[in-house]
Length: 137
Image (tube, rainbow, N blue to C red; front, top):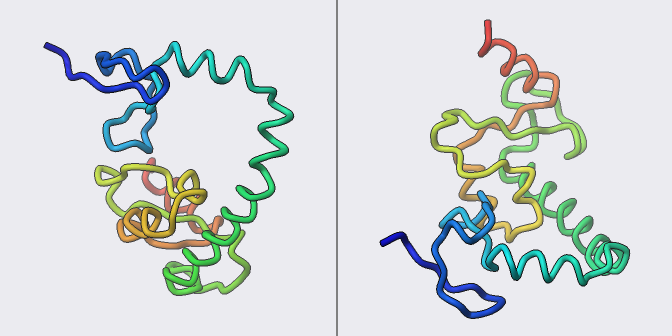
């Protein structure tokens, strides 16, 4: 019998395959089944969603990025450059331990972000491109 999950929309117990993928969740699936997910987002007006969530979300992401930069030492671990938070990327030292892209976690709680940051080094965007290029040479 396939693993089951309860949909937060219709409260029905359904197989995991009935839920859209979501790498940020512990089980890798959304909390709403595909049917409820479609119904919810068809009825919501995109302009209303953007107006309601974007200002808070944008500020939350900026705030968490600043906290992450402070947590990681405030400078590039490769070249030592110090600058505004926007110039830094978080490079997973061991890609096999990566659960999520740190940038996508910035709207989560900082406690969740910190778990992923502990698997990373903080580098400026130039050094990050060089590191990733060197991996293919």
